[in-house]
Amino acid sequence: MIQTLEQISTIAEMRVHIKEARRQGKTIGMVPTMGYLHEGHLSLARAAKENCDVVVMSIFVNPLQFGPNEDFERYPRDIERDRELARSAGVDFLFTPEVSEMYPKPMLTNVSVSHVTELLCGKSRPGHFDGVATVVTKLFQIVQPDYAFFGQKDAQQVAVVSQMVADLSMPVQIVPCPIVREADGLAMSSRNVYLTPEEREEALVLSRSLKQAEAWLYEGVALRDIQERMIAMISEMPLAAIEYVEVLRYPDLVPVEQPTPGESIIVALAVRFGKTRLIDNLITSI
Amino acid sequence: MIQTLEQISTIAEMRVHIKEARRQGKTIGMVPTMGYLHEGHLSLARAAKENCDVVVMSIFVNPLQFGPNEDFERYPRDIERDRELARSAGVDFLFTPEVSEMYPKPMLTNVSVSHVTELLCGKSRPGHFDGVATVVTKLFQIVQPDYAFFGQKDAQQVAVVSQMVADLSMPVQIVPCPIVREADGLAMSSRNVYLTPEEREEALVLSRSLKQAEAWLYEGVALRDIQERMIAMISEMPLAAIEYVEVLRYPDLVPVEQPTPGESIIVALAVRFGKTRLIDNLITSI
Image (cartoon, rainbow over all chains, first blue to last red; front, top):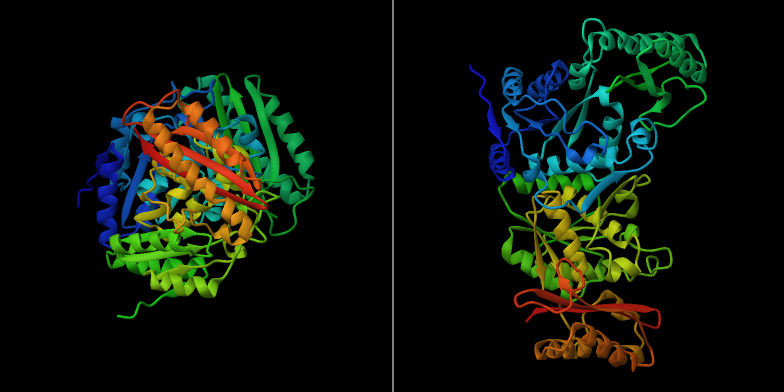
């Protein structure tokens, strides 16, 4: 059977399809993205296809979650290519609203989540997670998914959205999916396209340092020492500018002295190579 | 036919009934309240019954919307009486969660609406409308109503919730319903029960001053003068302590010099009589 995909750009039209799917008793899986799809996104779509009757992927580069000096304007976009990739991954509806459709008037409503947004990207990108929580709430109201699939590369985003869904009793189950990596270990990201060959080469230190951190964790190295060793390791790269390297408890994202068995620990980092900001992380337990 | 009413105290049980109603293609009308029902609430329930297949009334005294020195603890409660009144007004499901059911853990998520919350009760009750927006969002996620009925006595609440619903594309239509008054003009409120006979008598000045304001408005009296005359009128009552008297454009709640024809104007006031804070308002256009 040929997989058909319908591209939808208005909220009203999206609602019609959702209503019909609901009427037929179908389960709806949602994959919210900012487009410029890579294998990470597609793995989410495939997971949705496996678990739900109808798969809705949204592509929306959300201005609310970009800071004034960030890359909203130059964020990579290629809707033709995305459409074909989404179709091949089993997406039924591709929701691609313009900014003017999502925010026809100034947004006066803000959804914010405290505590889990204090460190990591929440610290270095003030307002970012308000923008994420607000747009995800809005997308959930439009698409009304039973399941929503998020990549663990944005681990803090998963923590924030999960907290929000629990706090507000949203009728959706958040499904975190594993990070997808290039063959050489670089975590897939739409922003990888920005990297020069030299930066791309040096950026491999990120996944290497995480692998190393995991080994140190199992060896019982103190969390603070793991952080320091990683910073030293990444700093050896001439083009790397570290924004943060943190070892925290997951998913509440608070510092702990040492992990207790069974507790999840996240090793998370954000590092700039030239103009390009990359994030990566590892979640594990001892 | 005897009207049956089912009282439900858990989110999980509420969801089961909502899912079943949805499966049967029924429309859901919701009436969010804090209980201690009066004719105002019941008029909302009847409006819901007229327009929807299933009527859900929630009774939840929401701690998030009370300030530290407000009347959360002593807010009047009488669930037995409420149940009978709700039944008589056509309510199918009475959702009465405990605080521990709604907020089992510290709430880290906050929904806030700017601009329309700056004046009136938003000014005198900081954080109040964050609490309202947050709990209404949560109740909407649980009950998933097609229509939600709110009394215009809480006119700013209607403005805040309407703004939030529009901003976040919530799939619900807000239905504002007229203020219901006692025979002598006092706007119905659960808090009226606090009033001593003397306070109750003096409180009639509120609806009288609003009626007077309406006449002045039609006569073309300047908005600022209307405000001043009302303040003078209410101040004649020895037990009255004015919190605010404002004449603003509705529903964006901004000050204007003079109304333009067709523009809605709200005359709104909050006045304390002893320990009891009463609000009332009038929305009209010239």
